[in-house]
Image (cartoon, rainbow, N blue to C red; front, top):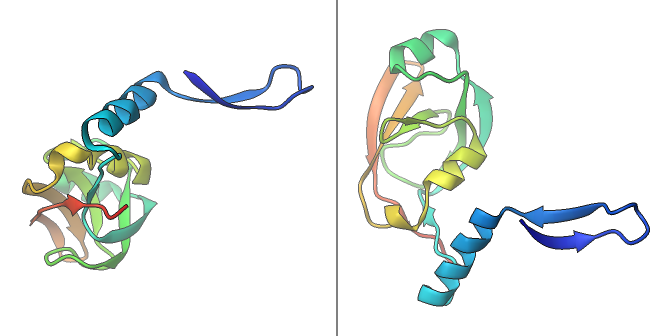
Length: 130
């Protein structure tokens, strides 16, 4: 990792960024002058995925992402995103990792759990404003 902060006199306590994250950030800055991220217009938090919903969506995870507010067509407030392109979403951090620059402008299939059951919703992420 790359040390980002150290506490002097605290017996070597330091904070670091993982080397793969540092490599990603450096390559994005070299290529584009900034770090690009995909954005699907939602505000969310990590939520428990009900067992029945996990079975219906065929996702092998007990947590997912519950949407609090939505700006995109197709997704609704209260939806739980259980998977993106078939890959389980286990929390907000996972969702952010999955929404990398490669998804900008590319249709993405979201497996969504709603009160009415499981749905497949296609969204097209846009570049997040800096």
